[in-house]
Image (tube, rainbow, N blue to C red; front, top):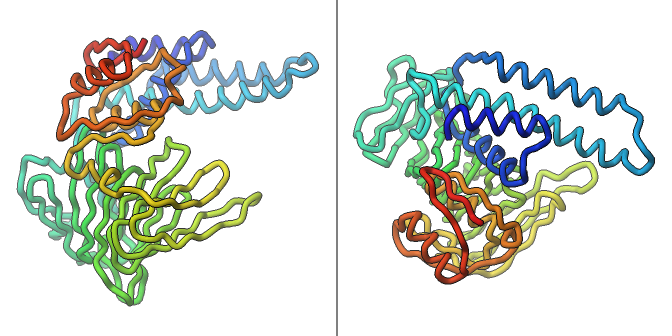
Length: 374
């Protein structure tokens, strides 16, 4: 998307004339922005002006007398407008970072070091990885990154690997745990696991983990509002921040899940059994499990694209992540319809939509990096 087109959509959103599809597109661009990885100083007069004008409108909306029965509607608009104002700021930064010259890391897998330094992990290279002091912290072998225990004095130092849309990476943690990160994911982990402490990492997105066994140091994965504790096992976690749910599929071993809980709803726990899927609904804070075919949820490891009983909206999100494309759905009747489909290994996005069109009679148009569904 060009800078001019993005600003046009921002202006329409601010003026209240944007369509539902355009708002969806802006939201997805915001999600993509979250997975770009260079935070450069920025300033943009148009973005700042948009923020001020929108803020004035919010204040104006609050100050105006309302007709009976409209208060809830107004406050809903105020909340949405406030959220959009934050979106404008971040999208403005997204524009500057994706359009401006210089060392931009958009579309590249990166490693963020404890001091904020960002290193590009080029999947076509094999090279040692050093921290900002020149200490070797690991090796990169193409699309695989192996981290060794850090010699850093600060044992609380954290590393973060960011994976953009359209990419994947396999990493090995200092304790030997192996993790495959899917597109649009980020993993934060200690530079070194210390004796006597639990091994704790944080995930946003999707990952498959083979946890190294260590009964003295339980492994804890934090994902959104879920905590997954294991001793040694294999499981898949789906926990994208923009989704309304998180899922854990256990291939072997056992894991204990716990929700963070809220004031209105206490935390809950669940012992997940092998061959089962745990689902955590963010709105209700409800944890549940059911038996599943685990290979469906781990197909992405082999670059296979499989949908089982998945809503069309969730399919579109998955396609955007895997192929780094923008999808505008103008056929809202399809949003909640559930689909079954398998596309084999590494299908082209054109092939995916050709088959969806053939089987489900979906009308679409591909123009550059944008796909519109009519």
